[in-house]
Image (cartoon, rainbow, N blue to C red; front, side, top):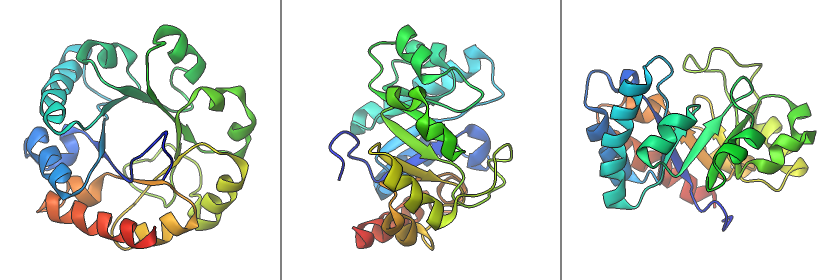
Length: 211
C-alpha cells in the first residue's frame, strides 16, 4: 500500500446518483461496507446548494474519520473544510490549485491521455484518476477507455498512486487492482445499489483478494 495514499475503495457521489435517497444515508452505508474516501461531484448545482450538501456530508464523514474530496470547485472545498480537491483536464490546473490552496493535502488529477504524464501538472497531484478504465454513462466527455493494459502501462510511467474509475464493480475490481491500480473509485455500483453497504463490501472483498 502506498503510504501517501492509504486508500483502496473510493466513492464518487452526487445527489442525482442516489435514486431519490438521502445522499448522507447512502454515503454512510457505503462507509460501513468499506469505502475509505468520498468525492462529492455536483456539476450542476449553485455554489450555495453544492456547499450545503458538502457541509452535511462532511459532518457525517468526520464521525468516521473519512476524508472528503470536492470535485472541481475549490471555493466549495474551502467553505466546507474538505480534505482535498479533484480536477480534470478542463478544470483549474493542479499547479494553480496549490497556489490558491497550499494546505490542500489530497489533490487528484484525471489522466485521459498518456501525454499528460509527461507534463509538470502531474507533479502537483497526490494521486491520479485513471479515467475511464471502462466506458461508462457517468463519464460521457472522456476519451476511449484505458482498459487493463492501459492501467499496466501507466503504472510503468509514474510513481503516483492510481485511482481507477469507469464502470468499476465487484466483477472487475480484482483485475483492475492486479493490473496496477492502487484504488478503485466507484459511482453507480454503490450509489445505485439497493443495499450500498453490501455493494461496497463486495467490491472491497475483491480488492483485498487482489492484494
